Image (cartoon, rainbow, N blue to C red; front, side, top):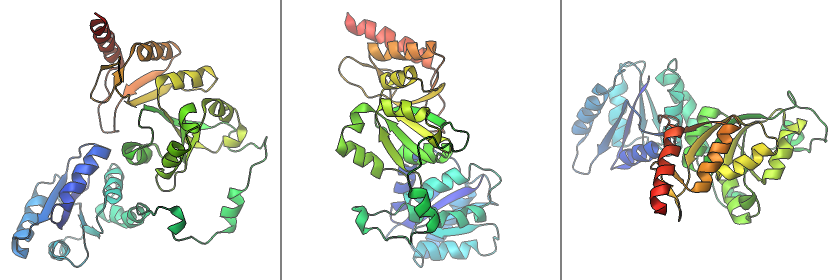
Length: 329
């Protein structure tokens, strides 16, 4: 696996690494080197060398640096000379780091290959709101044709939507979902299935705006998702479905949507619920609903990010029942 060194003026690199851990999970073979105001170039260079020495694979090293031409870059550039398999990318930001984490999961990729891929991904993470201020890309004939409405009855692909992954998450579309999970699943569309959000224009707009670059997000009521699952026009769609509650998921499955595997990311605590894990709380109706879903053949895992080990759903339900019973006394 390619080793990564983050280098910056001040604590930028350390902050980006910490935030990256919140989104993608803790990562090994990552080192941070910070240039402090009292530090000279030679001391920074020595810290760089020490950081490289902590990496498991010192043959493939990728340096993500804040600013081209600054001391961190200059010292890193000098260090890289003579190491033909090392690479530097400047303009360090969170989308760049997340993409580097994702790319190096392919053990066959080199530091050079990842570096060549990163710049475009990092730029995609720079967005403007209002969207009217975004630079307009020239329209192409292919894009114009794609934007046209597809006639009812048209069969695309195999005529059936590919539901690549399903997640229950109170927060729906947020950083962990838009980056870590989307990178792993590689959908071409994210679909939030919720009656409540579909009729809340503010939340709906915020979710659509939170979509990661290149992967549009739609918010639909449960009845619409049932229709989509039967519509042959969605045969070319690889979808990542997000549900706010297990109850919404059950209604969707009872409506005829074929779902067999579900990830539980978070279920928020509220009055009457008990804390089961640090991200999941359940009430009596949640327990009954999940048990009903299991009876229907749905298999569960509970992970916040892909790198986490899954919690045992049966143990979670057992704990929830015991704590709810104790709470009722």
